[in-house]
Structures are given as C-alpha cells and as structure tokens.
Image (cartoon, rainbow, N blue to C red; front, side, top):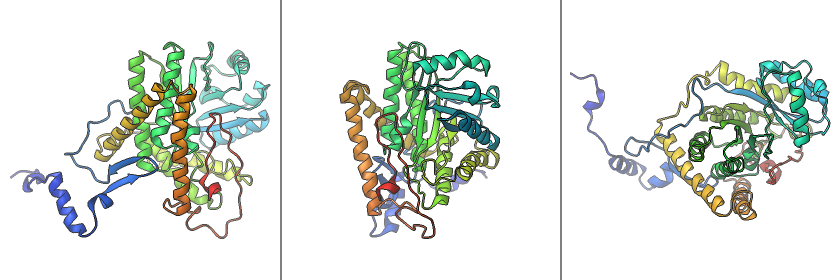
Length: 413
C-alpha cells in the first residue's frame, strides 16, 4: 500500500477539467467566470492555476537575502525645523524605523532639525532642493550621525551618485502597474548611462495600488527586470524599494475604510519584497486632518504585520504559486515591451519618449475615472455606500515633482 493519495486517482488534464467546469456552468461561459480581464491594468489572467500551465519561476524575484524584514518608513516635509523634528520624534516613538526628510526651504538649521533624534540608530534619507543644499548637508552631516549620508534626488550630479526614481508619483497620477514599472526602468537605465555605470545606489520610490495580487507581482517583476538591466550594463549599484501608499482610492468621507485599504496595500508591498514601506496618513492632504490619529494608525499597520502576522520572516513567500508566477511573467513582458518603446522613442528624457508614456498614462487615468463614475469599479465610501454621518472633508492639492498631475478619484466623482 502506498501513502501517496494521488495514486488513487486518474490524472486529469487542463482541457478535461475545463470541459467539466463548462458543463457545470451550463449557459455561463468559462472565459467570463474564470478568466479575469482587467481594463485598467491591461492584463488578462486565469483565476485558477495548474501544473500544466505553470510558467518558469521568476528568478531573483527578491533583493533580500537573510529575511523579509522591512523598514517602517515615514516621510516628513520640512518647512519648519521644530515642527518637523516634533513629527519625527512622534513617529519614531510609535515604531517608525526610517525617516525620509523632504526639504522645502532653502536655509535649514540642521541642529534645530536633528537635535534629540537618534540618527545613528535609524535609517534616514533626504530629498534636497538643490546641489547647494546637498553640499551644505554633506558638510554638516558628520556632526550629527556616523552613518553614511543618503541623498535621494531625482537628478544626478557629479557629487551625488545616488538616484531616486519617483515612480510613486506616476502611480499617483493614475498609471497602471505596467506603466509604473516601465517608467522606473527608463529612469534607472538613464541614470546608469549618465554616470557611465558608476551609479552607487538607486532607490525606487514606488506607489502601492489597490489591486492586491497585481501589486505583489509588480514588485516582484521590477526586481527581476532591474537585475537584468543592471547585469547587462555591468553595474553593481545598490538597489532598494521604498513603497508608499497613494491617495487615488482613498476617501476622506469614510476614513476607516482607508485603514483596510492601506493594510492590504502594505501587505502587497511586503510580500512583493519592498525594503521599506511608508503607509502615509490617509488624511495627509486633507484640509481638516486629524494627523495624530491617522499617523498612529499608519505606523501600527506595519507594526501589526510584523508583530502579529510575522511577514518579515519568509523571503518571496509567493514564489512558485502558479497564478503569481504567471501574473509576474505577464507583467514583466508587457512592462519590458513598453520600456523598449520609450527607449526607441529617444528615452524618458526626450519629449517623444516622455509623451509616448504620458499618452498611455492619461488613457489609463481616464479609464479609472470613467469606471468609478459608472460604478464599474466599486470604491466603498466613494461611489458606493457613502457614510451619511461623516462630516464633509476637502482635499488639498498634491504636489508632483515629475510633471504628472495627481489623481484622487473622490475628487473626480
């Protein structure tokens, strides 16, 4: 007698299984029920998986080697040093382990900003306004921290060989996963070319969308594709991902639903292999913000995913999943094809290359808006089951550093 239970059953092919399912469906069509066609993501994939249809497992799907841990990041906009320092200390006390300072004033008192913050014990990054500010910070940095200064800037200079790719803002503008990956690859590849492969580090600041499995596949796909580019270019630059929740699908009129959205979004970034996750307060751009509550909830999402769910232990946990490998493969192929189109048009810095991508993003943006208005895409609290007891809330404008205007569906409906 064998212990292998599978030997008790005759093997069934995909075709036999599909025929059996179709008989059960009667007048319904197999393709309509078990094939998902995503108009926004421009993807078509099966809702089931089988060994027979299993694609090759994506190699190098994660840049992590020891565990799946991630930094709990928080972005601080610095317009007033004392206010920014107070915010930094508050989120660090809540559990943040990484800070990104976005400097919004020319003259910064570094002592006033850094006093009391244990910079040696956390990760910090900086978006400076210009090269003069970079030089000023670099000259003062050793007085406050022993770690190497991490500058995150969208443009390179002879002194700064650390590139930040702001694909987060492209996703916030309404881009789908294919378009965001292609944009990130185009900017990164251009950085390698400009520095003649002397680029020291690259940080992909990526947005997190609402489509759970597509987002996981997106983070897996970009790591695999960037590894290929880096290898072809002969580059050894350090690479990492900071994943940020966006506001495309958020609602100020039903705030607690945002917490559910942010939780699944953070999970998709973590399971996809992001090195840092920034769950941004859902009312960050509200004119009537309750920032103390929303910041605490934002940090707690990552705390719960670590302390309660233990997602920090298993690297690339969905590797080998039939559906996930097929979805990652499709995303890689389509994103790579778009990347090549941008390169053929002259690169992302050329008007032709940028306009080619912009045209596709604007078309996707229009589809998102129309589907929400027509009720084809359900957003609880926005176009379905609005909270009648919630006081009115207004969005302020979201600043973009990439030229792509931000999209918030609640403002469009």
